[in-house]
Length: 146
Image 1 (cartoon, rainbow, N blue to C red):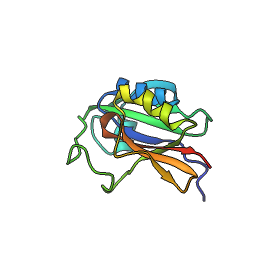
Image 2 (image 1 turned 180 degrees about the vertical axis):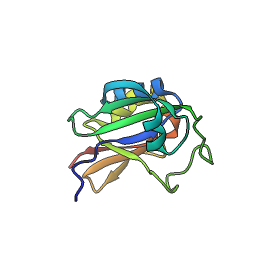
Image 3 (image 1 turned 90 degrees about the vertical axis):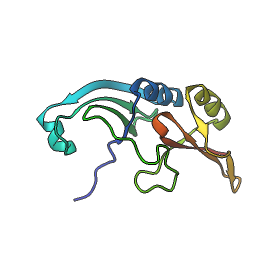
């Protein structure tokens, strides 16, 4: 048995509308929103009394999806430290290829996007950076230049 495809990556956020706006500005399209609750949710997630609101975002090529999840119950727990460094165990970051890194950063800054250090040049092939988005999410961006 092999994996057929990567269906989506889920990220828990504290402000669903802000996360949708951020990823929409990045170029993802909102497929839909839904409230998820009931026995199947409890069984799947492994928590009791799950009630969450999700938004499914799709990449422009139609192949990648990002599920943004806001837990209404049980309340989401904050990481410690509140803004973990990039080398924290667990999901590290989500990376997107962009066609114009400077323009993308300019559009994301008003929505809270902050570059962690600076834009780097990797062997004159890519311009890369990490930035923090809503709920402290680390997003990596790469523009091919070579």
